[in-house]
Image (cartoon, rainbow, N blue to C red):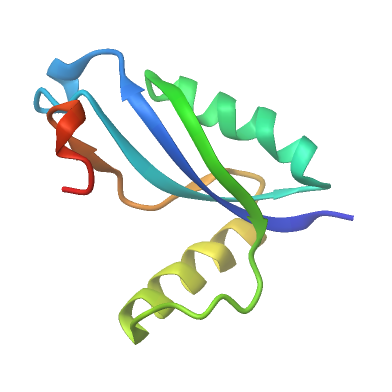
Length: 106
């Protein structure tokens, strides 16, 4: 049985020129997998296909009734999760990128 997971991945950008000179960032991804061990290679492949290098997978969790801080976030992430549940692809949220290592959380 496939389960719906979401993950937060921190990454380094291998070609900063392609990302407005940003050097790294993070992104939420949504995907189906049989279990967490099955999800990780798919996460790695999705990140690498974009020319990014994983610096940390912060977590891989089942996506169920996650309470978000705002209704706007709830609608956005529930929609991304629903999209991932309906396809075989890894579904990306918008990438948050930063220009230098000491600019975390921009």
